[in-house]
Image 1 (tube, rainbow, N blue to C red):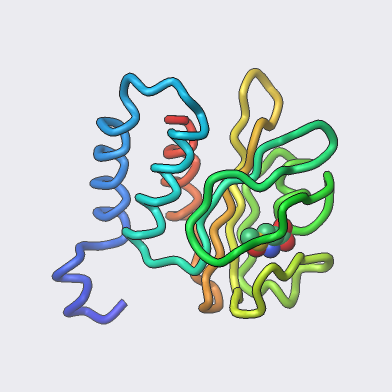
Image 2 (cartoon, rainbow, N blue to C red):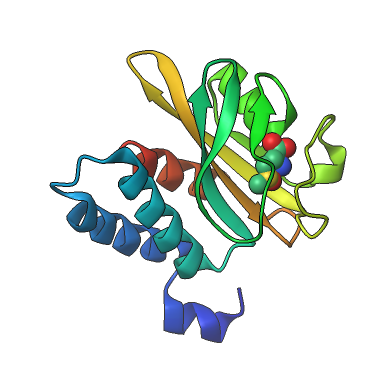
Length: 155
Ligand code: SME
């Protein structure tokens, strides 16, 4: 990020910290998980201007497309398939700096260049994944992982 922009918007950590506080207040008292995911996807997407931001929910042996912001996407992803299905299977966050270097990456959009997938774990099982795509290479790092893992715990 250019230095002037950083002065206007704050650092990435400052943006995430503010967003986290806003989400805490926004989600308080709402129990419907789709509504919670929908507003979380919208808040993240419009804060950071990602290419695609959304959730896939575990439905049996597949991930099913859930609330998202961005272009249309594949609706079902098998366990162990693509970045999302692998993060589900391995039950861990995956940062992919260049999607062309991830074997089996599912290209919902050719514009997507890098990606992060964060699983939502409840009582030891993955119930959904948060998937964020960027049209730039190497958008996501350990700082995104830290904050996004914190954010999905709100859900
Ligand atoms: N690229 C993902 C598929 C989902 S879309 O990017 C929205 C993957 O490989 O799992």
